[in-house]
Amino acid sequence: MRDQKLVALVILIAVLNVGHTIDHIARGDVQWPLTIDAMPFIAVSAIIYALIGFGLYLYWTGRVGPRFLAIAAGLGAAFGWFGHFSPFTDQPPQHILHAYRSVAVGWLALGWLIALMLTLIVATIYAGKLWLRQGRAQADEPS
Image 1 (tube, helix red, strand yellow):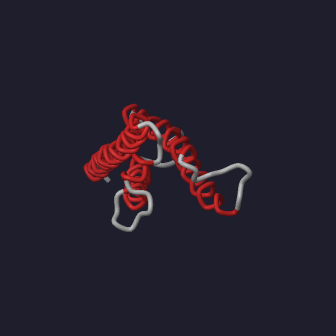
Image 2 (tube, helix red, strand yellow):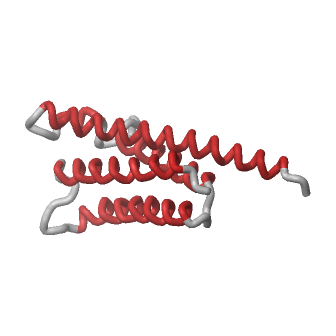
Image 3 (cartoon, rainbow, N blue to C red):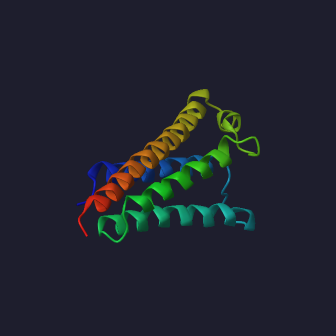
C-alpha cells in the first residue's frame, strides 16, 4: 500500500516546481527564439520533471519504495539550495526579488521557491521516516 501523504507531497513538489520554472522563464532564463544558452536550463528542467513523474509512477506501482523518494527529494533540496541559497549562486533570493517591477510579484516568486524548498525538506524527512519504518518491519519479520 502506498502512503497517500507521501504521494501528496510529491504532487505538491511537482506543482511548486512548475511555478518555479515559470518564475525562471519570467526572469529571462529562457528566451524565444531558443538559444544555446537556454539549453542547460531546459535539459535540467526535463530531468527534474522526468524524475518526479517516473519516481511517482514507480512508487505508485510498487517498483520503488520510500527510499527512492527520500533520496530524490533530498537531492532536489540540495540542488535548490546550491542554485539559490549557497554563496556560489548567481541567482540568490535578492536576484529573484529584484527581477520584477512589482515588489509583490518578487516576494511571491521568492515565497514560492521557499515553499518548494520546505516541501522538499519535509518530503525527504517523511519518506526517510517511512524508509526506516519499512526497514525495521522487514528486520522484525521471522526468517
